[in-house]
Length: 221
Image (tube, rainbow, N blue to C red):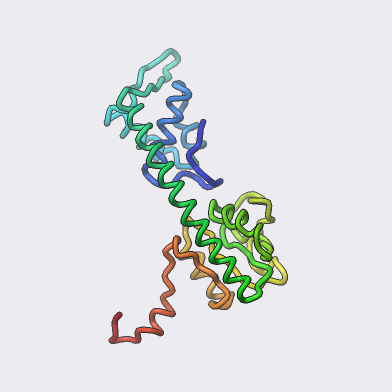
């Protein structure tokens, strides 16, 4: 089935799961809920819930076929919804890529300013792919990607490690985890100097320690 994901991560948002389901039904009317769950990387119960929701909204119709199986078809409303969600996704993807490219360039410029030549990316994602492409025009070398939960040994042409200790000669770390950036940042603070952790603003990371230092108890911004 066609995927709307831009990385190897499972579908996560409501619109992404819905679009993935509509695409799956459009391409294969005999697809099963188990296959939908596997291809979207979601639980079987969640796939069932989204399918029932699409049927209830009139986006998908279901017909029983021999051998006690079911066939699923997109209704005209379902085609219209698939078109709308696809357009929304493409708009978001373009906006995300443009902003991410700008912030990756800024992160790499900061590395060059401090003469940090070997940088590690924390998180295998579309953001790490964009930063890898951007790094080709700089003197910065991507020493690897740290992502404990990633199942593959390589991503975006770089070796993937489970922890920072496995990589030698690191000058800085750039957060590229788009699924749980705050948790990634908080974990890194326990093992890496704060002034060498770069956090692209697109991720919305909050540095609570710095905020507490700037505004002590009893004060506010």
